[in-house]
Image 1 (cartoon, rainbow, N blue to C red):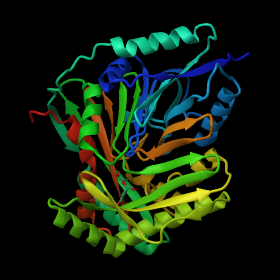
Image 2 (image 1 turned 120 degrees about the horizontal axis):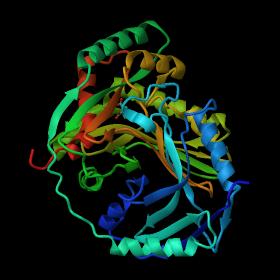
Image 3 (image 1 turned 90 degrees about the vertical axis):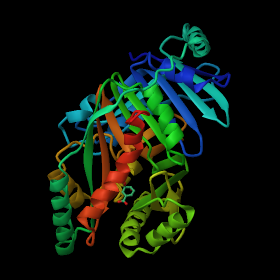
Image 4 (image 1 turned 180 degrees about the vertical axis):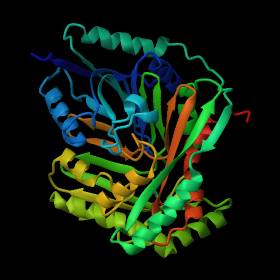
Length: 432
Ligand SMILES: C=C(O[C@@H]1C=C(C(=O)O)C=C[C@H]1O)C(=O)O
């Protein structure tokens, strides 16, 4: 007989983030998720965990079944807010080589023991436990620790000793070949990624990396998933989904140009991007494909007719918010949507074959949906780009670009180089 899972929620005093990050160091499983709008969720420790892609089942169905099983075990104790599952899917569960992703290669979700939700500076703690008798004591001990923990401010002082962009010449050739294939076949778009390997003098302090992410990357999600020594970090601008029982909000983000040095130049670059045929058609593929997927599950779809600009620290993109309304099954829709042509390509299966043939690495969580899903049916997932995996002193960063018929290989190299910057810059020591 599976054990019941009791849960309760309570108000918390606003907590100092230094304290929460220091506390995070004690736990094997940690997930922190912050939206561009300032919603924050911290999750510590796990009562149950799952590797989405580690099964014969489809990864979305697998997580859906696990979540349903957990739901049947939940028992509220004076609770108004249920717990949530947190974590990420993998880009492509068929990619079996574990590589740099190690045990995160096929994705990772867990049901946290402690969740802190921060909305408008209101802090709520949701505690879950196998023990009805112990839950109040566990909750009190955890809350007490938040204020008593002693944050040690460590300066990073951790220079990058080696930084290598892997297989650049091969990647350029692959981009050129792909553009030819697109011109000659019914393939329309393939998002090709490459990676950057970084070697540090010693293991970085993830608390400092998180703080740097916050201070250097405004207007993006900030995401940290820690599984023992493995740390995945992302400063993605791209929403995969914000959802409730009867709505599903997503966005088409594609087409990229750098930020300008001055506001005038920045505006000019934005206008160039908005007027650029190649980028507009690349982004239109994404809008149409996402809209069709939402319609396929019976949602009524609304989106503006033309894109606007989504500006981040290093780059700006074409952006169209897309909203679906109506009832639907969440995990079936996630399965239909992922990967959208913003991260895979079009037609999807042909593009995925190209990606698998060309890329000599496993994408792991790169480009995959990552976030939190509540047992009340609400939640939010982002697309895990502008990201990297850190394992001790070694780190791999990932960046991709949409290749269409008239893409120019050298420009795509430059674009992906810019996309390494969000994580590269936080790994750099201040003194460098
Ligand atoms: C694949 C990435 O970004 C995606 C590709 C884009 C493009 O080709 O212009 C833009 C935004 C993202 O949808 C990445 O950042 O690694």
